[in-house]
Figure 1 (tube, rainbow, N blue to C red):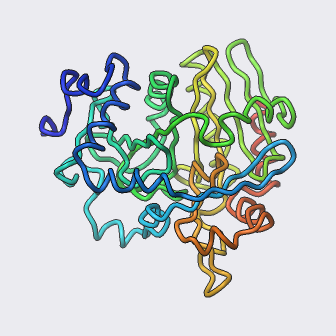
Figure 2: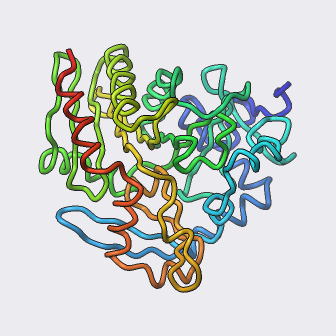
Figure 3: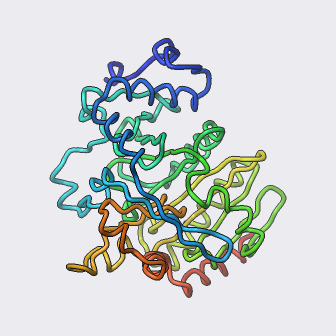
Length: 335
């Protein structure tokens, strides 16, 4: 059982107010920072990460040098490698120092010991199942709303950045860290194409942001869920994916609206990842990268990466323009 892992409200309250889930998460991180040396060292390491920015037409892309992310960026996620190891997100396999809290009776909220954000959480299902958003989008929406005052929720598909494709999980981090968090309204106003609109929902496409995305805006939980799965089905048909299509998802809740940003993907890693010598760039894009912060765990890559290479990386991993256009046409015909 997981009882020994769970911090109760009384324990959390020693670290601040713990009335809401987002406050509990903040308290959990403070407790873990105090009691878990590995996590503390890696969070201290965030103080020395390097960041540089490339400016585009009304938006920016940041590049972060973060050596602690080498574990994720270089993760082997082929079937053989996954079968050869135990899930590191399963409660039986967690380090003895790691504690958590329960969300929605089905999920553990854990502090990510290899952070990108100043507050970074991994939220796996307690009863292990493969990584898929199918059947879990309602949980994604619930979580997004509950912690919207502090955090953004995101999901990496099993072939699009998830270093644990064998264990269903979400992640969360500080809002306004990724450029997309603050650029979203501007992007919709400047580049957005309204594909579909009804009383409680609007669906947009954006195709001038280096990486194509679909955005759902809705104040109705059930309506958002219905059309989310319709969009997933449309992507599956166009990309010829039998199971879940390749995608990354970011979730926001503001002004009584859920906003779900979906990045359909073409491939997991760009050609630079597999190059030899000077041409190699160890960058494996996932949700945070698609949100505008490209993570480079090697300093050599941070120093040499160019604006043109960032553009090319996004182009390679994002769904092709022709396929994206076909996805948008299908959404146009929703009823």
